[in-house]
Structure formats: C-alpha cells, structure tokens
Length: 205
Image 1 (cartoon, one colour):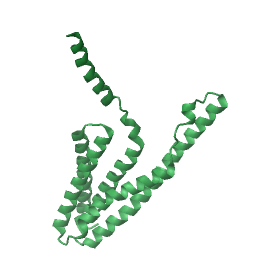
Image 2 (image 1 turned 90 degrees about the horizontal axis):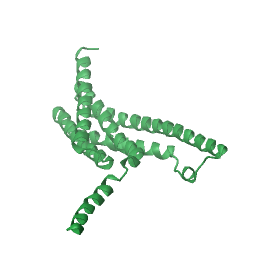
Image 3 (image 1 turned 90 degrees about the vertical axis):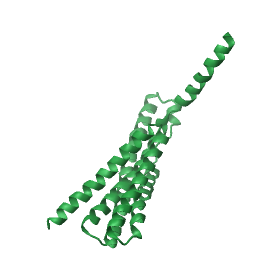
Image 4 (image 1 turned 30 degrees about the vertical axis):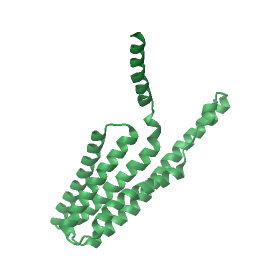
C-alpha cells in the first residue's frame, strides 16, 4: 500500500514541474516584435481605411490610404525598434565592459547573447506588413461600399482573434482574456476613427 501511494504521488508532481517549470518570459523579445507588430499593422491600417471609408466611397482611395499606412507604419516600426534595441545593446555592452574592468565578469555574462538591432527592426517591419495586408486584401476586390466596410471589419475581427490566440499560446497566458483584450481594442480603434472622421467630414471642415 505504501509503494502504491508513493507511486501515485510522484506522477502528478513530475507533470506539474515540467509544465510549470517552463519560462515563458524567454520568448518575450521576439514575441513582442512579431505578434504586437502584426497587431499594430492590422489595427492601424484597418482604422485608416475605415476612416477614409467613412467619407469616401471610392475603393481606390481606401486602398491607397491603406498602402500608405502600411509603408509608413513599417518604416516607423523598423526605425523605432532599431533605435530601441540599439540603445539596449549600448547599455549591455557598457555593463559588460565595466564588469571586465572591475574583474567581476562571469562566464555566463560573457556568453550572454546580445540583442541584434537590425534583426529586431526587420522582424518588426515584416510583422507590421503581415498584419496590414489583411484589411488591404479584404477591401481590394469589393465594389459595393457598405459590403466592403463590412468585409474589412469581419476580416480584421478574425485576424485579431487569431493574433490574440497566438500571443496567448506562445506566452502561456489565458486565451480568452488575451483574445478579448485584442479584439475590443481593435474594434474601438476602428469605431473611433470611423466616427470622428465621419463627424468631421459631415461638418464640411
């Protein structure tokens, strides 16, 4: 009986230690650059297109606005990420040099992988473009104005849920909470942009 009890206790303890012992924070840097970059591209470009769609029925105007937002956003993300990671790299390199001068550097510090600014910038730009292409493709082949707006909202909604699920899965966080947070934020951005642009456009300014 004693042996059976010991055996029954050890199995759940091992399972818990394997599942809970994984450090999801190790995925933080590239996860932020990829998932958040794609979400930014999706929401910002979709909101721009919805804003233009509030006052113009021309599909060409929506597509050109979305494309301009894609290019500008990807450049902004890449430059911002490059500057941010470069600053982080400078700080870490300076810290390593100070530790070496003081003779307190360890083997772990010397072997630590330093951030790559160009890699981070490229990842952010590509992720932004990946997200931004969703509303552009959704609006490209639909002539009817109202149907086009509805399809853009539907496509963005699906993409928001997917991005929220991916972020939750890779980060080990609650899926429903993550998806709802991303979804509500995207809906608010599109609704506010559409409403304010419609208001300003109808006032004749």
